[in-house]
Amino acid sequence: MQIKLNIVVGAVAALLSGAAMSQDLVVKIGHVAPTSGAIAHLGKDNELGARLAIEDLNAKGVMIGGKKAKFELLAEDDAGDPKQGTAAAQKLVDSKVNGVVGHLNSGTSIPASKVYSDAGIPQISPSATNPKFTRNGYKTTFRVVADDVHLGGTLGRYAAKDLKGKSIAVIDDRTAYGQGVADEFEKGVKGAGGKIVGREFTNDKATDFTAILTSLKGKKPDVVFFGGMDAVAGPMLRQMKQLGIEAKFMGGDGICSGELPKLAAGTMADGQVVCAEAGGVEGEAKKSMDDFKAKFKAKFNVDVQIYAPYVYDAVNVMAAAMVKAGSADPAKYLPVLAKTAGYKGVTGTIAFDEKGDIKNGALTLFTYKGGAREQIAVVR
Image (tube, rainbow, N blue to C red; front, side, top):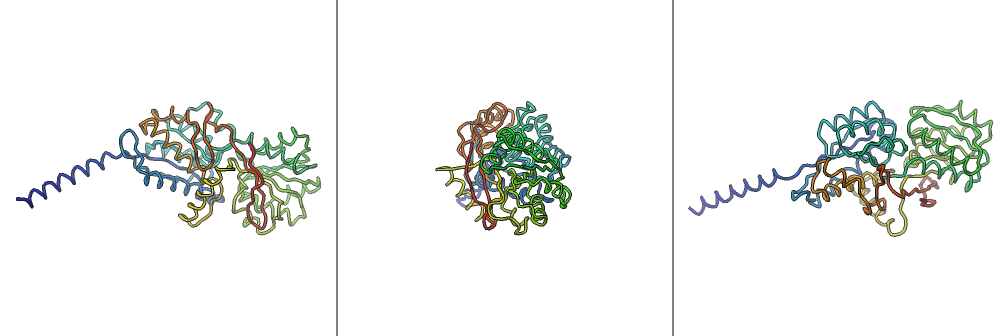
């Protein structure tokens, strides 16, 4: 009789356990980045940041509205292409995700933002810096990095004042990001009394820059700024060396990666490249970033490229808003997300303004020495 009773009790316990398991709240977080194509190394970096955040949230046993949340990552590849980006966005909407972190590029984030807005799904980009991203009036759009007005303008002033550039040339890749940051750089140079001696453009798939570099060489630039990504900047640096152009080379966060020295194939002189990354930490906050990078390396056996920490923070900010709202329903946690203030992330303190931009966004200036990236300063 006792054996039968134990069996019955065991069966009931199993059923109750199963019922409890079925009551777990499944929270789907979408992530989109180019995990194929020339900047796949940056896209994969972002995706790994999302995976680490999801893993940490599940390990903590986060409770939302009295239920244990089980976070799932739905990762999509947009190949850095706007059409593929909107298709990926629609796929995530159809999958009924609770929120989206991405996309990496401004050129994909901007068109995708309408898809998410129409569906009422919050989107936090960890890396889209074109000002237009948060200027369309969508209540669902946020970013955790400073925009190009700040980034490009700061670099422009730095080129004219700190580098004392007398003849500054500008090249961009005609993407929303590249052209946008180059425009703001040019404004920054002129505002600081600097002189732009030439403006050229290429595209984000180009590998031969002989014509535009030869044209600029005749103008004897002492600084060349490139608005674009590291996959194009590397070959451009190689060809500058071949043509005997010894100018300083500048760029935004798109070129400011750990891969740049490899892509430039050893042609970068120490201190030649000056780039800026949206975001940055100093003082006490630096330990959180250093700890994150060590944890990331131990987990994935690769170094952080650029944006993984911002992806990690974006996922966690979204989860924190759900916890505070007591719901993972986008309509219920979106107003709480919009009021995020004082969130201590690995990239610093996060608060959003009325447009969804990060308040008081930091910027970190870097150079390269001996093939390694070296911090110059954190500016705001």
